[in-house]
Length: 67
Image (cartoon, rainbow, N blue to C red; front, side, top):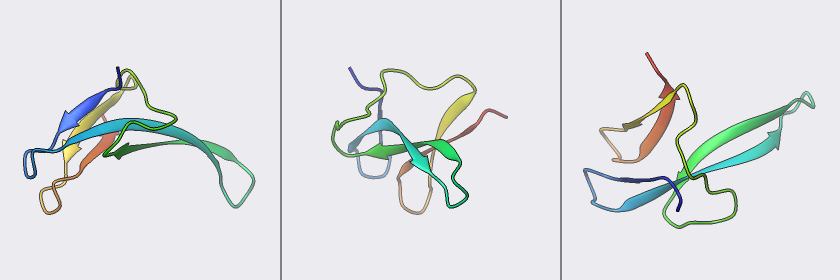
């Protein structure tokens, strides 16, 4: 089961995903994002050292490093 968060603003579920992407310098970096549907790359748990917060204006969930 994919890790999900319910938006407080829209009451819609969002599912956490990860993808490896190559930056312009050739370096490969792992990015995290939320999507409205479970797709390839869905994660079962929140990565260690991260927390979820919600953008107040848009209501979209985002990840950030724990404070």
